[in-house]
Image (cartoon, rainbow, N blue to C red):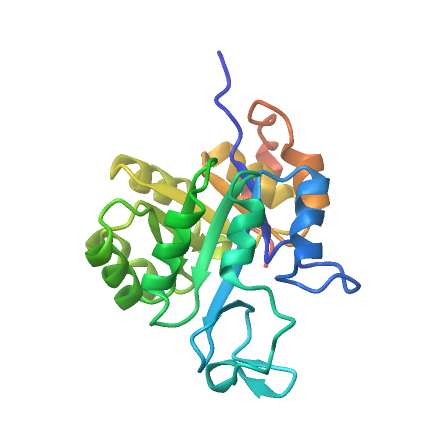
Length: 237
């Protein structure tokens, strides 16, 4: 039997586990590639001055991002800069944390079209619908952390379903694939969960532990299945 290709290996906010490397930074993105990842996930927010900046939290160094003036938070990477630097190097999962970024991200993708594909993702269905209304061809993904969020994936015009690992099981993977969509699992930081999710056939695994992720799954084929005892154990929290 020929094994199918392994899942995409993606860094969470670049490489989120190193205390000496700020998440969502150029250093973190470079580290994910150095470890051997196929790409990375990163977060985008909108400032009051209209800049699309790369950060996860709503407040950075005491400044609310949505209220930041042009002279504030200048050290944060901007979306255009990330796409210019990495659109030819790997797969990019661009998470929009707020509404109002849709036109900006689509313009940035036109200026720097990813050569190794991408997905624009969000927890917010209204963001997904606005993206598709503006561009029916942009790959989009709904992010799900709770069962209530997960039930909505069938009703949304998404190509990707990006699911917290605690909600993923073999049947869900099969259902998503049967619907013609891809399933990503996040945030997966232990070896056993990585192995099991890969065997279930998820299309990508997002991890803070980019070094461990590549050590565990960084071969051309899907890994040897976990043992029966390992399969009975729950996925790590």
